[in-house]
Image 1: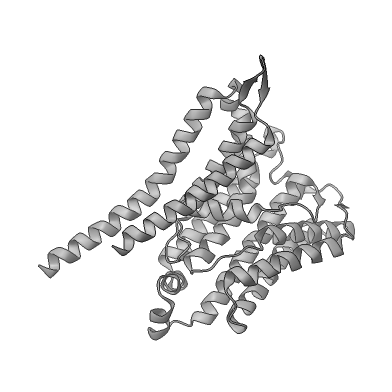
Image 2 (image 1 turned 90 degrees about the horizontal axis):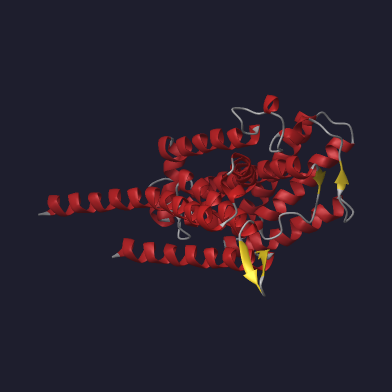
Length: 339
């Protein structure tokens, strides 16, 4: 009897994992099909598909780091501020004459340092991740504005500007900007980390049950510090992609983008309670967000006998509704898992 119950339990786990994988993909197909029917013809063009892929790079790259953080049972609300700070640092280095590689590494390192700060606040001061990163959200945004003197920092044009920019075919990798492929390669790396390494098993263990993980000999504090450092580094890399898109260091950019990143992870099967997350699902979640925004911006509505595009405020309402729905689905998954 116990063997039968154990087999049913394992079958249930496998079914939930399969559902978490196929659910977001089905959602992406459904959303794309909907806008393919109601939006303008330009929505299904190859150029628009490339634009969606380019726009996904920033949120998708940050979502990779957020996936690691949320699997470990944490959360990082400072992602948007880290992205802005990284763009400012990169632009400042380039303006000072630093080589593009040095400037890029400085932006990523800035994100990693911000992650270390978040980790220390959570570990040493015993602050809740929500409170600690809410504080650093404001602090890091202020630091970015201070460095930039509350204005954009112009930087010389370098190859960094071509990472996610629309460009000629000779400057693309298989008809997509390099940034898209960098995101894909990093996604594979994060998947390997979480599923096939000792650190990955420890991250899942900490997120599933921190006290049990501690009793099993897992260095919980060290794992948390590594997790937030990686999350910050990925946010710094997202800042590099944001800089490539804007070609300036902007301390006011990415306001509220942490919500998009968190929503992408939750839509993709990640849990706010920790212990659960999917790299593939997070990228699909980011794609869903960008497809909806692209579709809304290309959908015509009839107002007073004339046609007009959906205004931006409608897109904000839709995005907010997606976040609420994603959290509601996460709560539903958590309740079913505990039954």
